[in-house]
Length: 515
Image 1 (tube, helix red, strand yellow):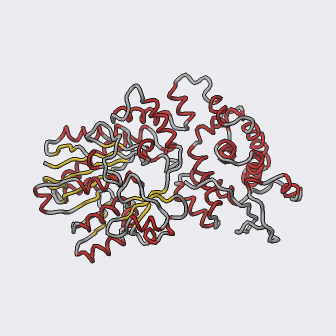
Image 2 (cartoon, helix red, strand yellow):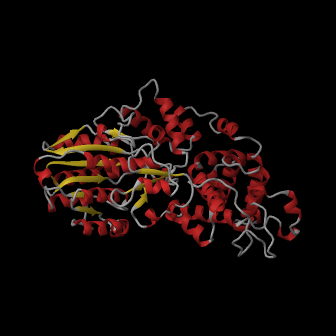
Image 3 (tube, one colour):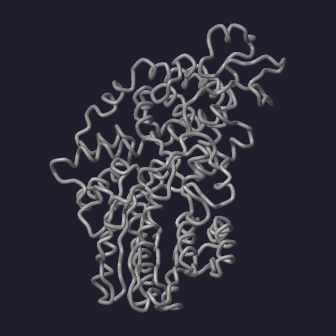
């Protein structure tokens, strides 16, 4: 996410880092005793800077159900925070949210009480303070002073005393020592690892099983893979861009400051800055998209089709919202003169798809083909349009356990029950996708979760029920920017990508051909 650069201290109503008399304020991270001595006693530690206040506001909205990637940019725009200030606020929110299990264990030890006995608003303040102390390069005195000031402003004088005491205890140990303290007495090594890496224990078990089940790791090296995977989940993901073929080029993104991706033939990586400032992204000819998602769409487009499907080329994205894969698939379909349909059951998500396909729809008109967006229940499309498409992508609704580095709140909202609840839907959608595919055509089943119950078990279950579909080894369809087959894709015929091996989300892909 954002970098953890120095924010500027902002006064009430000030947006340029100056106080009411127009004097430049020092950076909040490096606020010193000299600065405090210049502040009137009545104003000391009563208000924090705008950056931390924005972070706290975002934390409270996330706790109420908002998504960090939606609420935080909105708050940054409203408070006109950009550059290093925006980066600092982003690191505060994403880091404190991502590492909350670890930080809650630290807070519980330092406060000598379970976090369940601490008011949720105060706990969010503490999480922000602990992240500054243990996860960022903020000087301890600044982290404590500014967080106590935030507590006085948003929690009150009484809770501020608790915040001050807890953070001072936290500041007495470095992170490496706290990691040992919080797992003292843990009997289960998986639970200890989950605390240290701030994951729910059930997620760690599921990821371990997926590493083994996909053929990525075995008993000798699975623990090493698991530790590296969990660490990758806690590492902010880079900003990956896709140049939609025929609409933009990778060279155009490189010229805008985004070096070529090593993983995707149509990708680039933006090291810093706002992707919306790049004309191709702003115009919808390119987009922000994880390289794993790019590779999935490219694989489906590259798969050979035969028979009836080859004679009548028509493509479908069955569950297209919010539109990332649809944008790439549409561009590829236009290049081949194939009509493309993007469908979603949600009208809101279908509207998002329409927005991302504006440039593609113009290009389709020029090319004499079509790009259409529909709003239908994907489970009914197979009956409504049997054998109508040569290529069908089912990016199935899933738990999103493969994208935890991008969605900091997701690991705390998902439960094992969600996996079971989605299982029936995933199977029904896959059955509909196969029914909608013409003989000789292909279905790409993708999830941004590596959980075995959402991936290979779904495919194997559907294959047991019908004899008109066969599995195709998809590994040779996953090639890097130089055209070489990617390594470490699993034991086939399925493909499993991993953050710690490929630098992508943990995308799963299976390719099925209709007999």
